[in-house]
Length: 547
Image 1 (cartoon, one colour):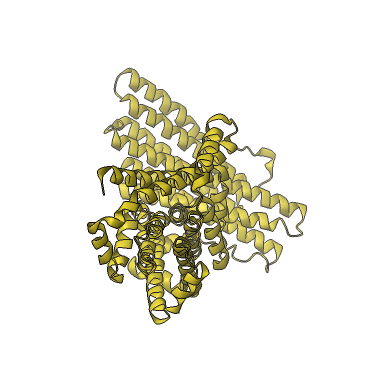
Image 2 (cartoon, rainbow, N blue to C red):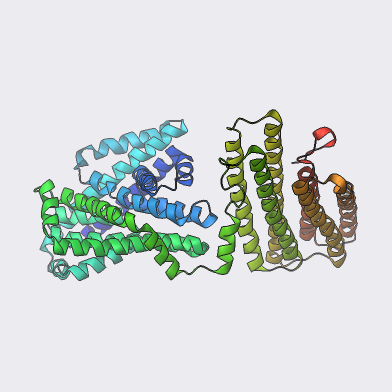
């Protein structure tokens, strides 16, 4: 094989991979946020989750992209592992569609696809049609890359070195391992399978050899997901492990089946006689379907195995408990007055978690701790998850035949939920201020710290008092809360004035001064939200709201 042919082969592979990327990006952009919304709301029904994963991956032509989104949702707590494994299984079927498409010989139409795609992408102004153009352009590049590869590898049939290499792969174990390694390098099982198709069509690869390459490719395709999980929490890592376990078990099942029942391969070949490219594509799809059909009934055991590999820590158990509804578990079988009380207690519980997060962020600000900063963000996600779950239940309450007063109470509690969510947002802000001080290696003056400690103390007391008033509806303490809120307002003005004086005397670093002003503003807004929470269930005559 000459140097020119090597370059031609590499160019064909590069054009094919780039075409896949362009096509996938165009499909994602054309669909907008709908894909993530669908994935986010994947139901607890594992069969529906499989269909969601299958449909999404067929659309974007990338199981890795689907799986990375799954990891992100599991990492944030918006999806549990039982939902994730169904989507992952569906994605493994969806990714086989690429090989089905490339099994068609569309090389004659490739120039037309390239022209149409480029024209739409470059000259059409509407964003949606530009995305459609990039999809067509990606298809054209993909098929042109395959054509180039076929042209480049044709002379390999006469190369003794390459023939010897392929002879070594006639050993099923070596072919299996090569499939894993090659796909891990490409980070795409569909891309690897298409390349195997190209070699088989040129007569360089037998069908039996391709079978084991495909089996190995399924395991190698997990590489990008494992890499993506390195920066996630333990649950995010478990979702990547689920994908690995599914494909390892899949490989075991398929290897046993084709050795015990060799007629399976004969049957697959008979579906497309004399068309090895289609036979490989069908094998890829059928193997994925068989694995999903079998493993779908053992999802609990696979999930349990992922927990054996990455054991559950005590703090994870607490996080899971915090993110689950405690009081609003069943709103359909209780009297109206009781369901409203359950909602009130659930919101108050969310408020306590947000208040604890605010306190932790203040502790982190005065005594920075990177681990504590991570815990604050995770607790912030907990508040966000509870906010969404409670809001959904509150919306469900509106479907019941409720009185006008009860509907009004639901609306007021929904507003309180929003204020509690804002408390958690401010906690995240304060944590980020502490990280900025650390990264810039600057600090606040002792005078500034002393002033802030008084303000933070009043703010935290106001938040806890507001939650007490919200849950007990004992407004005898409202005067004390308003006094605290007034003190925080006065402190905000006083602290800003003192800060300006320190800046004028060059006693304060400008950057830390900006952070000082920001945290003072956040604390003042927290006290305003505390007032809103306390007054949420009281008549609104004397009530004011702050966002």
